[in-house]
Image (cartoon, rainbow, N blue to C red; front, side, top):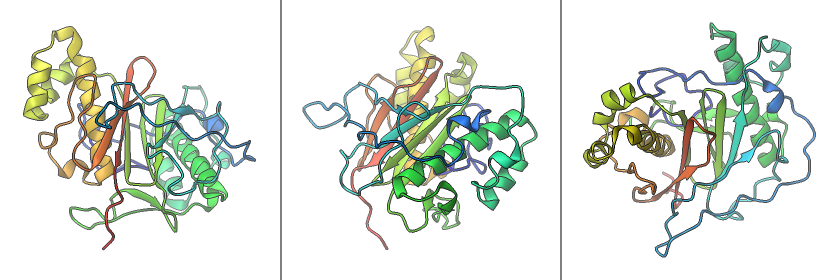
Length: 299
């Protein structure tokens, strides 16, 4: 679950439910959906804001992401011109029976990404990592109005220890972004303020029983009050919200899962200074995004 702050790659302390220190095997079998730097089609409209209740909080309607490979690539990002809600993109990465040729991505990914891709034992895991990162670069290239290969990625300092494994960032850009991947899906989020995204496969009851007790006490009580058949969905909602928030803050697993309450019900509860929203996902998955309501002061 809560991974190290953000991705491009979740190699360090990222963990999906029921696994510690695993990556969730990024990338997709098919970089064709988000791969090579092709000319940009006409700009897509900005994502609509989340519906709000009378107190200005997002209601229970999940945000709908745009689909990479189906919807047009976006126009260059204009800081402050959006709605405040993050721009969300979903990439589907179907399995295929042959690995992605290295020549299809080696001119776009940087040295660290190529090394990470080469470290995967299984072709499927490497392909998913490659596709997710090609998608990230393709979208960042569109938003920053540069070639995907020209985007210089780095990690911000960790807010807990200062080491360079905090949120991902692009050199010289004020645009914030985050990447998450699970199974054959990748979710990408872009915003004017720090942002986190998470997509997960719905976990079996055994994971809910073992990991659910580590959540916030109110969340544990909420899960226990539900019929067993409803707990997996509620747990998955809570899990993705919590991971999106922790990736957005940059703290990751340095914060225990029991500290911040985000809720298991249909409506997420946003921590102070943040807005949490669920995100539409295909059957068998849950997704969420979190974005800071204001830009934190610079040191």
